[in-house]
Image (cartoon, rainbow, N blue to C red; front, top):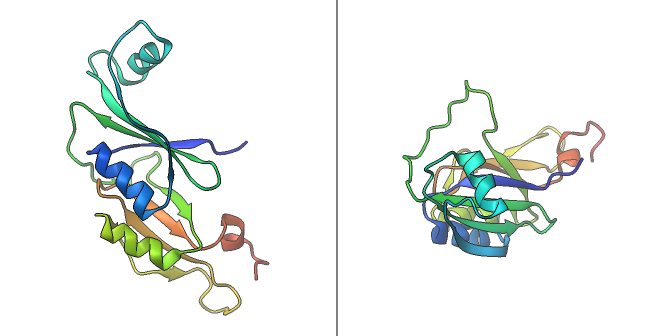
Length: 161
């Protein structure tokens, strides 16, 4: 099994594309595109099945990470208020990106309207040979994401050095 993409809701598609490309370095695959509610195409029927009758359309953009994982962004025509993350509920509450430019990505996150949610943490502060760092951040719309300095396996493997 491989990860293919993650889908997120955003409040302003142009601002979202700017944030994810300029702050985090993702590449545009398909820029801001309007989708209308219709039943004539397979995509139209799929959107009705997912969002229900009367969703009134949305804007969509597809971006991709340097390792080929897609980030699919949706801006609904009838916007909702920003949700508060309820950690007592089941479901996905964040995604994680990895970069070699850890501090630079954090600075650009703030520069383009995102937030830093915590101090940078090292997973193994007692061992100077293990330098894996992480931090939780938010995009400008409150979507929570984590940033890693090392791979998932390097971060958690007990024999990583």
